[in-house]
Each structure stands twice: as C-alpha cells, then as structure tokens.
Length: 127
Image (cartoon, rainbow, N blue to C red; front, side, top):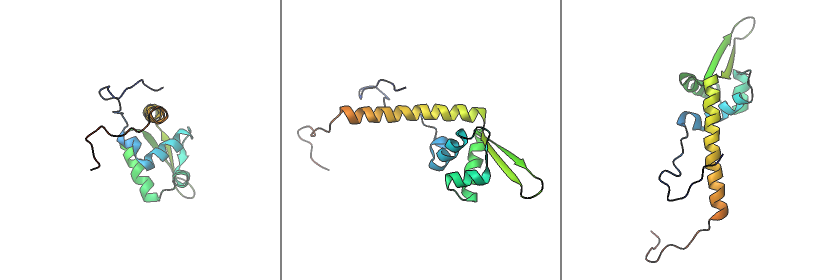
C-alpha cells in the first residue's frame, strides 16, 4: 500500500526501515525463515543464505538479541542440532518492514514512470 506523496511534503521520503532487519545477510535469513514457519536447521539456513558458520552465528545473535528469532537446541545420538525460527514478534516486525519496503519500491516506480529529468535552472553549472 503506497502512501500519496509529493516532493513538497516534509518527510515524504523518510522511510522507517529498521537497520537490524535491513542488513543484507539478515534480510536473507529472515526471508528464509518466513518461508519456513516451522523453523530451519542451522546447516540448511547456512546453505540457503550462502553464509559461513561464523557469519550466520553472528547474525543470529543480533536477531536473537532483538527477540526477532528463537533458537532451539537438540542433542542426542550424532551431532547436536540447532533449529532457528521467527518469533511472533519477529514475524510481525518483518512483515511491517516488508510493507515499508514496498512503499519505497512503489514510490520509486511511480517517480520513474511519471518524471523526466529536466535541465537545471538557468545559472547552474556542473560542479
């Protein structure tokens, strides 16, 4: 849902994109988890997001600190397993982020379709 804006509106293009969610690797992690509502094993998440063990672990720590994900551990015969899934708050926050990002995309597409680049006003020269 795009908001109506004009260039004269104060804050017309001041979007509220959470920096924790907006980071490239975390964006991939959250998208993968949104597609796996029952959670995703660490190794599968690592493969889906093309991250190293250490890089994924660090991003998961950030997301867990903000209570956006839940991490579950299982041990038994064989290797221990780690299951990661979106928390209810994380799902809500990420869907809100996606809605705001949709506003950015819609505004950019509208501007690209309706606006042409004009010559600068008289008296302006390249810097």
